[in-house]
Amino acid sequence: MYFKKKAKPDIGLSDEELVLSLQQVMDADLFGLLYDRYTARVYQKCIGMVRDQDIAKDLTHDIFLKAFVNLKKFDHRSKFGTWLYRITYNYCLDHLRKGQRQRTSQVDEGMGLELEEEDRYEEELLSMRSDELPTVLEQLDPGDRAVLLMKYQDELSIKEMMEILELGESAVKMRIMRSRERALVKYRNLYPDLS
Amino acid sequence: MSENPFKIIRSTDLPPEHLKQDVVSSVKRIMLLMRFMQLFMSDYSMAVFEKFRLVGSGNGTSANRPDTDLKPDP
Image (cartoon, each protein chain N blue to C red):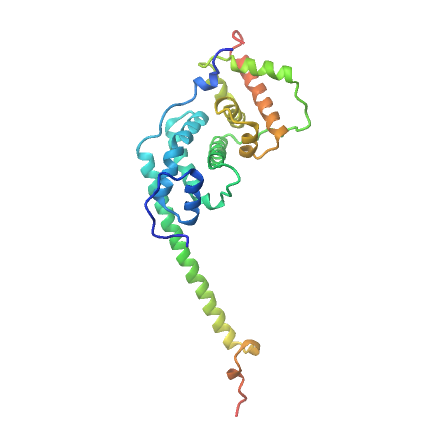
């Protein structure tokens, strides 16, 4: 049965066990345990994306509700954290794009990567000053910003990014490269003396 | 290479305390709503069943009727 009188929440359960229990019996207190485990990560990810605490709070609230409503659809093929990250990423992007109506450019999967050049771009990106980086990120398309935060802040693997972005390996690599290039162009325009 | 600037700017803020209460309250409201929807759905299907039965018995489609309904008129 979908709804049933609940047992006491067991804090010793793993994420997967908690989710399995919630898929069998919907329980607000049990869901509260999942909230406790992931709220800081979701909230901080939202702040990273929208750079506003009040909006981040509202987004976090909505993201957890969305996760609760869709919990039955979670198929355990990925980690729960990765699934929640995908919801967070998509929800923040939707929010940011509402007023912007900007489409991510089509990914060209056929383009090859010049590794040495790529290393140089990465080095330049990571040599940005931390007080300038937020301004650069703010001026980027939300999709580019999200990709750079995944790669360089959360240090997600290509495989994790493939799951979150629902793209193939070469498309993910291409998106990282494109986002990095666009960030560097912004940086050079904003701070010509420093770059 | 200097420290990764992306790591430096990472937010360490925590969500406000009351947010958990807000989320759990909303979850409870959603559960209540889902329960009502389940009730409505079961009533709805019952209603459809009842309607079907009434229409079926009055329309003279005798193929599925029990034999007792097929007695010839005297």
